[in-house]
Image (cartoon, rainbow, N blue to C red; front, side):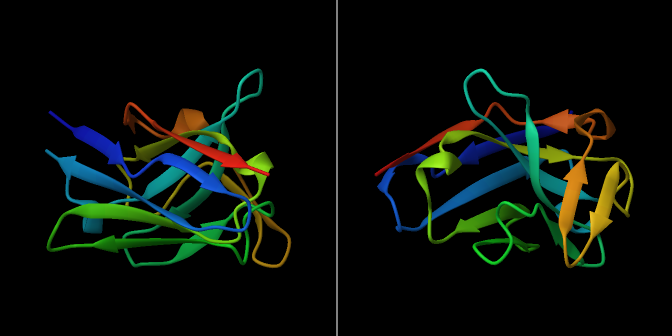
Length: 134
């Protein structure tokens, strides 16, 4: 049974940094596509970025240059390093995973940023809240 457990959320001031973690069990993070999503109150869930099994990362335009996705294979964990945080980054952040090595449901360009289809992700964590105050 696949379990994804996020941690690291909390409150931070605008311009600050925070790192989210996603610990996986029943699933090998290095073998498949994984991603981060977020959902603010009253808004649709939106993709933040992904990492393929080969380590290739993609990011949404709204976070490009500020957020970085990485993983630690030994700890079987996924991370989201968030820098230069803005109040509009306030949301519940979710770790998600696919059964494929290369991420499906991703469209866009490296220059302009990517969009993500949540329906292509089969496994989800419970989420961790990030609140950025101005």
